Amino acid sequence: MMHARLRDMLALRREKAKEVVGSEEVASKRRAVEGFPRLESASEVTGARAIFDMLRQSKGEKIDKKQLSGFMSTFGVGNNPGLVSDVLLTLNDDESDETLDFEGFAPFVAMLRLVEDEDSAVDAEVRLAIEAAHGETSIESVVQKLRTSETVAERPESIDAYLTKKNERARHQDRMLRIARTTVLHACRASELSLDDAASLARDVRGALSWKKRSDASAAALDVAEAESRAAVQIELDAMLLDATRSSKLGEFKDARKIIARGANVNLRRDEPPREPVLSKAISEANFDMAVALLDAGADARATDDDGATGLMRLVATPAPSLKLINRLVAESGINTRKHDGATALVVAATFGRTLAMTQLIDQGADVSLVMTDGTTALMRAAQMGFPAAVDILCQAGADPHATNQAGRNALDLALLADRSERVVERLKHQGARASKGALTSKNQIDRRRTNSIRPPETTARRKDATSPLARLRKPQPGSRRYT
View (spheres, rainbow, N blue to C red):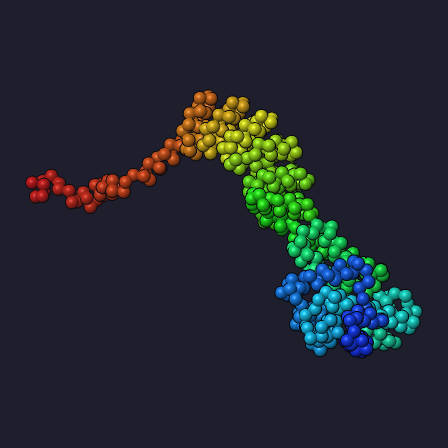
């Protein structure tokens, strides 16, 4: 039925055009045929042009017969080469040219709206017939009644026709939604559309595909298209923002600010473990300008990853942290915030030996006596990792060298067992720390094993040969002929 109506309209347009052949107003006369669907409002034209730009740019800057055929199939009209040929010959100003311009594409989009109009007409006719036959105002209640009834339905063909058209209409709505979403995504990638502009464009595109856009059903379709397109563009902008955090180049940083301004989620979290916020990701990549831009846009400085680490903890672990950014994060997220294991930003900085960050944190009021869940302090971490300068800073700030963790080890014990720096051991002893007997015993065992492991292989071999039974047999014994 759809093809027949289109063919009738196309034939009518060709007959009208023949009457003015040779006139300069051929094109305008063709598009002025009474009763032919047209795009009437500016928003409809905007939506149709967005679809046209998407198809043209994705199909090599032109839309020929083959692309138009596939596009009609996408709309659900069907891949009909004859119908496509009629459409092209009728809509183009030059009948010998198979390439569509926007002037020819706009009425083509309007023609495809007849699909929705046709569905609405059939749906209304079936609804009236069922209501008249069964005295019901709700189609769903009629269908349920007839399905549960033991008698044969009076008009089962109406019920079947209704259900069939209802399913077809749902599929058509899905196709229109996909076209609107794809068009908006293409426009978002090709230009710098904001999230709100993309949502508005989605309504325009869906409106261009809707025959009665002021009806309740079409209004709901516009709302769905806007919501779906907004969600799709949000995902696109968020992905672009994550890519921008991986580089601190000036050009890409400017692009990142544009992405934020377009509506990217500044509190986005990555999907991969440890699922850190985009702020923490930018800090880990040493993209401090990007981190400032995110904070300016409203990023939550207290957001944590799966381990409970904040952006401040990521920052103090970097080799050359920004002191201004440290001060800002301390002000917005707190200085003694803990991870899930109880570590503070000071403990993290001590673990990596970041003396500049440690000094800044202590000046800002970081507590050097706070312990992790296993009793480990910042001084223990610095001693265990072998950072003498960090040990000095913590001791000067009042860290207790005698404190022990849950295993009974103090900072000197951990320094001896790690054996990373003799200077750390000397500094802790100078502070009055004493190693426990258990640590000294473990240290002696470690040294003994290390000495045995580095002994030359030939020395060990000679010792084994001299004491083996075979060596004793070979050695001349007193009173033997070999001995004399």
